[in-house]
Image 1 (cartoon, rainbow, N blue to C red):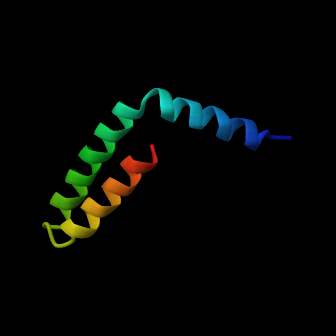
Image 2 (image 1 turned 60 degrees about the horizontal axis):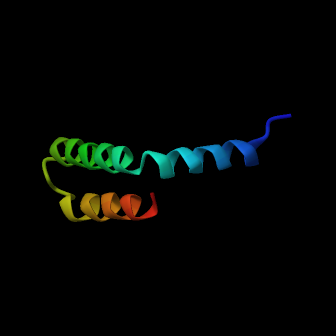
Length: 56
């Protein structure tokens, strides 16, 4: 049987350890999505990026 609880715990540890890298990657991804949507949803994308960065 797969130990999902243990895997999630390890994932959380990795997220805490590499918080700066995750934040930078999320920011870059937000920029790519914003460009591909012709900046029509910039406010929503920025809010989503901030929310993800706050949670990591």
